[in-house]
Length: 358
Ligand code: OGA
Ligand code: NI
Image (cartoon, rainbow, N blue to C red; front, top):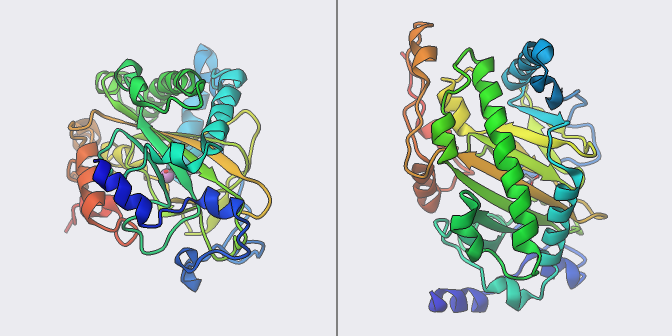
């Protein structure tokens, strides 16, 4: 292990933060995207003005309004695989504290962060840059710390001990997102006509990966990205952003910028819900743009079934509608194995488990 870390250090691991702090006037060549993949910032080309759905989560707790909210969730999931939630019950102080802890973490000296660096996607706590600095052919303007977060007591001791407030603040936010996720899955199951309790047991034992992302200001945001187009392997991802930067692909394959709404959290459907719903809902393809003026932070909380538990299309959605299952089954671990040996930018994982229906 020590050996690997040392090699990485010698092997010119340079974080996006270090590049920004050194004042580079241009991005190094490894960040330059081929012209067809550039984000076309500031032009109307390729991006559209679309109103994206916002769900008032408090309606779900009011018996007379719940079915309306479930209907809105159904439409949002079908049209976009995405919505923002307001009145979600996570206190704004918990959100603010988590963002503050993340700021302090990324501001730490390089040597301190390098204690947690790893290119091994199976590592439960991992600091890195880009997607995987050791294998990426194009690099992305992002630094991250990722860690398993549920059950909290199992993992928290392995989290960064610096800044000293990190475990407490990020721990509180992780627990809040775990609770919210359970309520969201319940509502999503209901919106598909499934029992509210569908998958609840598995989710209680499920895994949660918190990806804390930092996108420093970038000298050439027109030719680089913070993250390439991808969908998440999760059931749902709950995303907290400190400012605008996320874009999602709509059903016409146009990129739509997700507006920053103070106090809102973003919900993205992941590959596990696409499979569970037998394709009635699709995971959302998204990417991250960067900019010259503001450093952006995000917390992507990726919730999924336990590491080795396979997810497959819900029997009710297959049988009742007389549909054949459109997907094979997969586990979170299958996904990790896939990304360890494949370029998931070239081919999406979910495409590898789709059944070709004659
Ligand atoms: C992710 C992700 C989006 C963002 O971590 O999978 O898509 O805005 N993050 O940071
Ligand atoms: Ni993502």
